[in-house]
Image (tube, rainbow, N blue to C red; front, side):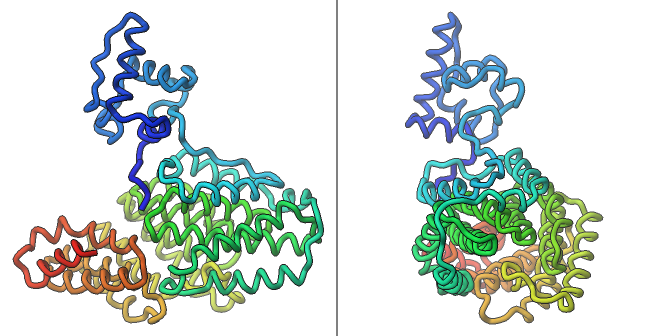
Length: 438
């Protein structure tokens, strides 16, 4: 998993090879050079990096000096957004897809990268996407010709790689990355008819989206967000507005997962009304409902759930679903609706919906089943039925370990503090032991 660098101060410090004590020493030295004294020590750095405290104006001025940051940005942006190392949104341009994809492929293994985009950068990315018309990008492609038969082969292979179930997909990450690198090379150096260019960019978007989910399931959130940004730029260049909205919703889902539901809701508000297919609007509305539930916005959440249900009901008569959301089903709607109700404090009805959705879920979707089982365990815990919760959690853990999905393991681990209240209940001790062995 990514190193848990969740604060830009930690990122800036680690990029320079400094320990917390090193940074404290640098700040004290900067103060001495000004004829001042600073009492900053390692413990104070730890508090700043863990959001336990905010440095005062004098300390921020010293930190800015240590990192050679623009002093004017301190007041203009505020803590911690002025710190170096925050990801910024890459402007959409005729060649931005290649730049974004190259960055994702280059930094996918960088364990020192800041965990994910700031709320500001993520919102900016969504606003740029919403305001940029794909046609303006497609008009500027240039380079060498690309053989259409080669594109056919690449698309066919890419479709197979991106449509594998999770249990198989865990073994193909290197293949997806290599395929994406080949497609990126062709985009960068090619001169294509508009239709060929759109296909190449569409394939790059699909591959990069899949690569992002590979990393997300492994808990590598920095790499996931970069692949999704590359996918968004490629989807924009391909002219596929629905795919772009879906990729934005992946970034929003990640934000909700990382306990930033406000950022997720803001992004989804940009995307949900810019999709063409009802299935796409249904999925985005459902993810918006999840963010609103986490924020405690009951009325807005129920409104989004109603829209998700209505859009999914009309999807069958609207032609083929886009590939990226073709898995969306009544089972997903039921279970995620149940999770929303759990967050809103209605565990009994939530458990009914989750149980009904679990029965409808196809056998091939084991990763989703592992996630849903943790929702079911959470519902049982909130109802005080720890024995049933332990059964669901153990089944989720077994599935997650078999298919190689650490993200699902993390969900089970997140329930352990609540399970500890029921240490003497049947099955709970066995669950604790299984988690230690995972």
